[in-house]
Length: 205
Image (tube, rainbow, N blue to C red; front, side):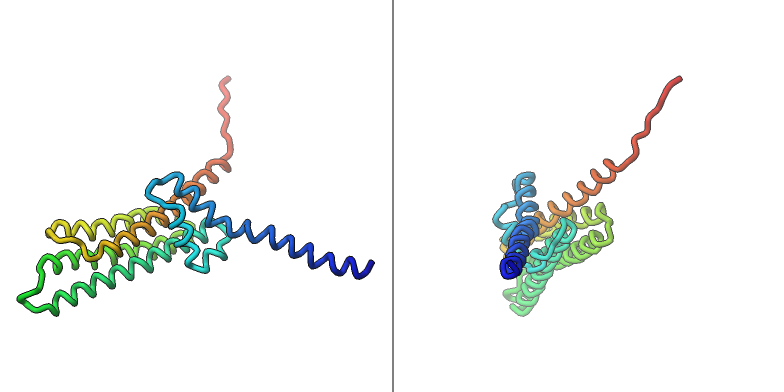
């Protein structure tokens, strides 16, 4: 009997862990599934793959932690896209006066600025989530979504195809995911506050 009880304890703990692990990992799946259902711009498969590319998503225990993961991923991508824009400007400058493109120079400067603003905004959004300022986080994330399009538009206005189109598309897709999760977090917070408000009754004599 002593041997039986000793063997049963580890098995019971193992079963408990098996039940808990899916519950934790489902945060990513649930967030991506609900976001994709609400927004046609979000691809469920991309959302899951992007979030799970960061090991921190596996440690996320709530939507707030997952929102910070998404915002950090988008920020890293914005920083990379800005670096690509700066590299494009350097390459254009080194081309010499005969081959240098004024259009690339003008549009590239716009991209460096708007992508830099996006990276800063996404960093601020992650900090706002951590501080519980969810409306601010939502606003910062929403502003960042426009940056990739603004960059591509700058090239279009100069009459040239955007050399940064691929980076901008990837950034936009990540920003949309980050915004969707952040917005859901802000909405859930409002609903929670409203449900906890005391009911006020007015009686007439």
